[in-house]
Length: 91
Image (cartoon, rainbow, N blue to C red; front, side, top):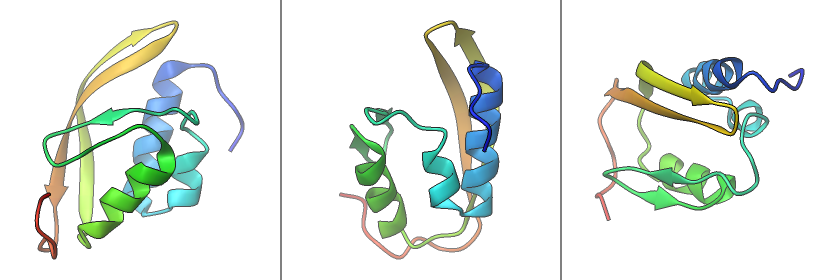
């Protein structure tokens, strides 16, 4: 992936890679200190994020609903549509 400083391109690329299930590509869009806070889990770096996400053993599709973009970051609201059943318990 060609590096981009355009916040919208980064978020769109991130979710396209998530929807392809290509975690190596997803990681190229993430900072080393990427923070994720959600209802099912929260993480402080990409490795923990992928570990938690993979534990659910589900096929999903992410659909971005809303995005707020600033020079220093992005806040977004997305829907996680589960295509196949979750195979683990929520911690």
